Length: 535
Image 1 (cartoon, rainbow, N blue to C red):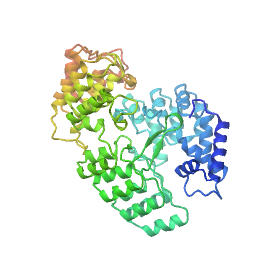
Image 2 (spheres, one colour):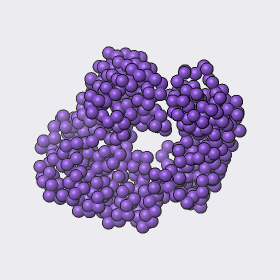
Image 3 (cartoon, rainbow, N blue to C red):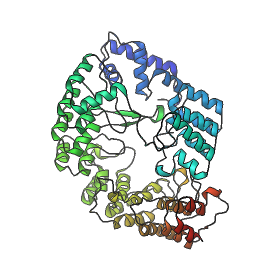
Image 4 (cartoon, one colour):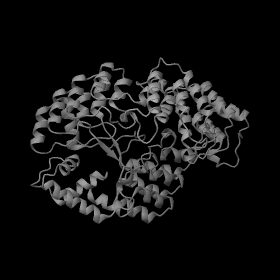
């Protein structure tokens, strides 16, 4: 969508779509069938065409699209919240209540309620809660510390906490509601249950009534995925016969930043080793190379779940073992071959990552996986200046100890742990250790928040490496308003806290807001060993 969309132009699009569909134009039919179930030329009207246009841009209705065109957007709502413009916030939420729970963009998980809490605007918090804001959802990459409720609680904003909990109680929200995609409810849930139970007669009856739809959920797919997960081959076959999308493509967001996730059914076939179902999906056009958001392609799924027969099947049907897979799983020879082909200009198109170089792809995922030699080879081909902000993401990649995350089945626990720190040292030689990332974070902040499956000595080793490279200790991030020492105190990293103090970090930080000082963090989080270290 253009930066300043024109409603008249969108109306013309709808009229052209209606005319094309009535004339049996294949492109128009494909667009209609992608966003509208059981459409027929005899009954498809202008308001239906407008609905298709709206859905194609990520909106649930034409009025929602019109409101967006009129300037009722998540970005404008955030502007109004930050300005404490209560009247404007109320007007925008009345026009589009879904904005109360929408993230700012695909890469920025701030919601309007985060800004309302940070600025301590109680009336706006109340308005957002009344419209369904989720105050328990945090901001990547530290969601545990950045929900609106947590921000208010840890700052001592008792009046904000009271408003949030009152709003949750009024709509029956559990005290600690998990992050979930909204339940489709009603007939949609009945259809998913019918698929799970293999009730083909129910599905046939609803289809005959033209009441069988497949609303795909962002985190869990649709009815085809339900069929795969419950091993219901006949249900899957029937749904594909009815023409449902074998990739179950779904969008999230709106307008300029609509994101897509697709490939759920084949992804689960690959993970569960369901070859017959996979072949059926592939025969109906499922792609082995599309990506489920944050979970990779079906080929990656097969590889990570050690389903080698599925890997071979998918490769036979056009699936690619791409750079991210090779790097994560320390396939050094394969990565070397890819780089050599790329250097010679003969790397097949499908292997090239979108929007970045192969070397960057291998570097990022090699650092994630602790693949020292792959990181070394990739760095030789990276020409970023040392201050490039992209370096922070690369520096932070080894910090997850990816293969050793306890709940991650895709990891290879047999890999050694030493590769992560080795990768970190290699990357440090290529960049400015003080590069600043989103929300004012530095690598010392990221080290302080490493996962609890990583030992204190390991965390401190990363911290000392950064300090030896000249890392500054006085930078405050934009959300927790704290230095790396403050973060170490919040997350209970006593060895790192001691290392920071030994290198000259100020344990008092009298210029900080009282709730953001190291001692305050240690006390409120119950880390008494750190309280002693600060003394």
